[in-house]
Each structure stands twice: as structure tokens, then as C-alpha cells.
Length: 394
Ligand code: SF4
Ligand code: SF4
Image (cartoon, rainbow, N blue to C red; front, side, top):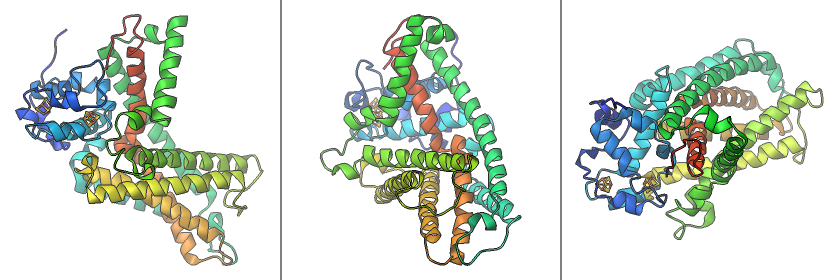
């Protein structure tokens, strides 16, 4: 098979935050240090080698790119300041931008001022779209859907979801195609026989339940601060709290909408704290705000190896998550105050606009790793039980 060489690959990766890795001489220190390395003696330096020799397609088809949890341990031992950990993070940004066909992800990552302006304009557009059909601000109780009609939010939500699904599916299809080719995986080897289906089901379970939701490798192998930090400050826990909080809020929103459709409870109606959907939303909101707040503080301090380098995209992502969580809580507080505070209506408008923005930008920013990582983990799990031509991997 002929390998195409991209002579701009190294400089392109530097635009995404990689250090100058041209001095890397494959000493293998990073491989010896990485807690994820088991039977693959070339991870992560193989990725750096791809960049050095311009093997763009090989880099983009590496499922191992997504197994790295950015713990930063490899960078500590690198004698050439090639910052392999930061290289891996930059390569993932580069991959997200290349899986995206619109060019928006590339802009968000490589042109931070333009990316920030896009984020501000989008939020303003969403807010103005909803405000255009606004009604009166009730003063006895917070009538949020009297202020912003539910239909306006619904229509906007449908538009946002269509864009997200189209962009997300295209990105995942592009990624899965590249990774499956690199790993010798075909449709037949995934669903072509009973044994293939059994293996695929096992790989799916490992990728989604064990690794993504349970974060097994993150907990066991990649928690460099495990001895120095209490459990509630460890990276894996903060990451898990943010992720579970986000998923919980998404589930609460969908359930609330479902109850409204079924005529059981109109959206926005005050209910007691123990009402299941509200309880789910409250617990998930606490987890999201706690996780995001601590991640922001840790990144701001920059003490841990894993957060010494931050890009504008890292901050934008955390800021959107944090604002969504905090405005959601403020809104809940406003809903239960005895008389309706005027600020509650503006918080509601701001909250929905930012939440919509977070969702629509998901395929084009760091949040995309929430989809790409499980896909890569699926292929990795498949590779650990080879058969039907599937190659063994990390
Ligand atoms: S430790 Fe540094 S120089 Fe050695 S292989 Fe890894 S990136 Fe290259
Ligand atoms: S950052 Fe951590 S997980 Fe990623 S390659 Fe380096 S040592 Fe391995």
C-alpha cells in the first residue's frame, strides 16, 4: 500500500498546539512511562514518528490517539522537550478538525479570536431568535414559557439537533472508516457471523460501559495524582462528575419534555424536590457544576502535569459547560422564590441560548471527544479479540 506523505503535517500540528517534535529521536522514554502501554511498545512515540515523516492518514486512522488520557506523565521524562502529552492532545484536535468537513472545527482551534467571536455571535443569535416572539414577564410566579414560548425553543432545538446529528454522524463515519481500514476491520468482521456479533457486543460493552461510563483505565492507569489527592479532587472523578452531570441533565430535559408531551406535567411547572425528574436534574446539575468548577480551578492553577498547557478551545469548552450548569441552578432558584424575580427571565433566556450553543458546537470542539473516544475504544476492544482479519492493537 502506498503511503502519501504530507510535508506540512508537523507545522499543521503545531498550529493545533503541538510542541516542536522534530527533535524527538525515538528514545522510548515516553513509551516506558505511559501507564497505558501494555503490549504495544511503540505508543505514543509512533504517533510522533507519523508526524515527523508526514504520515497524515496513519495518524488520523490511529485509534490509540484516543486512548491517551492526557495525564502528562510522558512529558516529564522526555529529554527533548517534545511534550508528547501535549502532542497527543494537539493531534486529537487536529483529528477532530479533519473529521469535520465544514471547516468550523479548524477555525475554532486555530483562530481563537474568530472562534470566540463565532461563539458570541451564535449565543446572541439564539437569544434574539427566542426573544423575538417574547411575551409578558409574569410577576406572581415565574412563567418562563409565557415569556419565551415553548414553541420557539422547540423549533430552535429541532434545528440545532438536525445540525448536530448531521455533523456528528459525518464526523464519526469519517473517523470510523479511517480507523477500521487501519485496523483491518470490515462490516463482515463486525456483524457478519454469530461469533463476530458476540465479539462486537463485547467490544461495545467494554467501550461504552466499562471504559466510557466506568472510566476503568482512567481510574486504574491514568490517575497520576492518585496518591497526592483525595478522591473528590482526582482527575478521573472530576471528569466523571462533569460527564455524568451532563448526561443526567440531558436525560432530565428529555424526560421533562416527555412528561409534557404525555400531559403529565407541563414544562416549567414547580414540583417538589423529590419529584424524580427534578431530583435527577438537581443531582446531575450539582455534579456538573462541581466537576466543571474544579476542572477550571485546576487548569487555572496549572499545578498538575495534565493541565500545564491550555488552549483557548479548552477554556471555551469549560466556560460553556460551567455557564450552562450555573444558570440552570439560578433558574431553579428563581422558580421557587415566592414572587417572580425579573432576573429569572433573563437567566432563563441566557441559559437556553448557551445550552443550545454548547450542543450545536459539540461536533466542532473538545466535546466531540465524548463520541470519538468511545468509537476508538470499540475498535481497540475489537483488536484485543482478533479474528476475521482484525489486527491486534494496543
Ligand atoms: S521521550 Fe521524547 S524524545 Fe523520547 S521518544 Fe518520547 S517524545 Fe521522543
Ligand atoms: S499523556 Fe499519559 S496516557 Fe497519554 S501518552 Fe502520555 S503517558 Fe500515556
